[in-house]
Length: 259
Image 1 (spheres, rainbow, N blue to C red):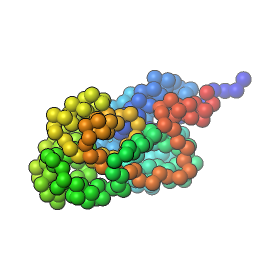
Image 2 (tube, helix red, strand yellow):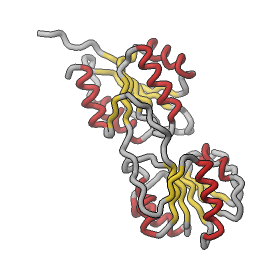
Image 3 (cartoon, rainbow, N blue to C red):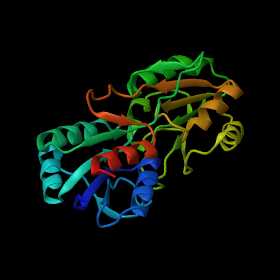
């Protein structure tokens, strides 16, 4: 009979709903002969939702810092479940894992398919330029920026717009005139439909994060005839294995551990 595998630590690069669900699932199965779960959070929100298992908060210090952290923490596998627009941490993680020959999996949902009439752009700056052209023709010029406060700078110079900015940080600076905060996470279709109608929104700017979380606002916008500007995600890293659901990520890890 073969001896059971030695215990290993799994690092989840988190901050998303997928990461939380994966950590909860893996932590429920964490035993001495399977794995220990460590989730890393960037620490950008004041009261993050902590998943089960161990938690580390803060950055790694680039590729070298992450490489050293993986070595010191005896990480046997990394599952990168960060936001698909957080491209820098993903590049650092992939390079650090490659340097140490540590198995690396990218967990991200399927992208949303752009519907007819939606305007696809490459980044926030291009979205702002498109919105500048659209604003004069909008009846109410009321725009929902579903981007987070870190990505508002390109929209500062837009004239005659009234902005609703979705953010989960009540203290975050909003560098826009005629703007107010929406301290509310994305909801389902009915919730988003009600929000867009009450706020009299006639344009929506969002990032193509994919998955089910957040898609309700796009369905609602389509139903209400709201103009949609959808920002494409950055180019994905080529090469790493990928999963679209926590179940697929768990299966990859189980196969890696020989279960």
